[in-house]
Length: 147
Image (cartoon, rainbow, N blue to C red; front, side, top):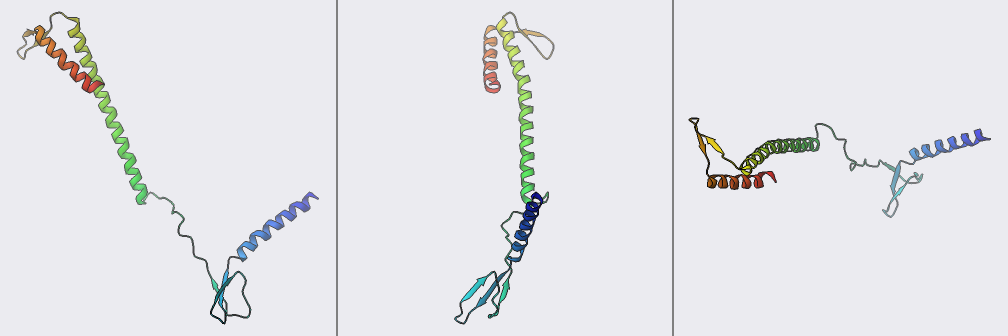
């Protein structure tokens, strides 16, 4: 009994798909009054012509490596990656710079005598006013770059 149902199902599916292929033709004819008729079945009395349906050109074409859209997308993606890499390098460079500023500020805050080496190799000790202006300058640079 189950085999009969299975065969009947297969038969029904076969008939349904084959009838869809047969009904794909469209017939047209003009009657005595000049009125145009369309049908899926030809009429024997009239001069009938067959119309082939147009292909749907609205379906998107497959994307290939050579398509302009794909090239633009790849360029934009590469540009974003390069910008991200540059930002990471700048951030890394700034991190080292910020650490250097922090060390210099910590040295000034510790107090004591701080000196600067001249090009001739002589030590020049900085005054309180010079240390204060240096601290101001470093704090400003830290706020600008490191925050």
